[in-house]
Image (cartoon, rainbow, N blue to C red):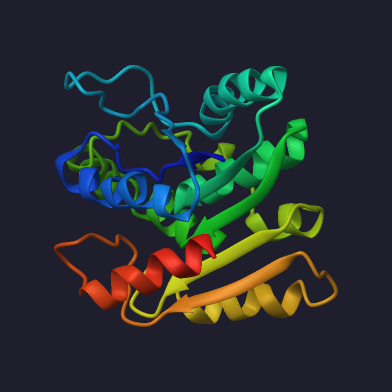
Length: 220
């Protein structure tokens, strides 16, 4: 089985976020994934320390489509794993192009629309500076490209896990509870919490027990 990881705003090549994706890329194989691909969006710093373009939902989706078309043409099944901003990219991609070989979707730490507004409108100047430290280039039009998650989930038909940690400051359990309530008439959603997990789960900031629970909640 293959899995496509849709990262959040922090570049997978940024020193801090390397650890976030190292766990997923290393441990996913224990859950039956033979090929793990982590996407890179325009605006992300690359392995050589260079940045091309700026973060935008449409350009992020374009990157995903090329990999999906490759798998679909070869008859290869795959799952999506989105984290943070990547949850929006993953869901919008799934409902926009209807990937033929997509099996299921896993969403970790989906951010509420109001949090994205606060970060990328109200506090934009501060967020741009913070983003640079995460290996990310953001311009002032980023928020206008976003779409609220709720109406997209309503039309999503693939089996979907939505999970967060009890210490996640961007995607709090109350928001997951709200999504669960709003989607109560659909049976393709599974809602999970990881006790003690923050937004960015790494070997360094979480106990072995939290990491194990995190992986189990995502992949089983």
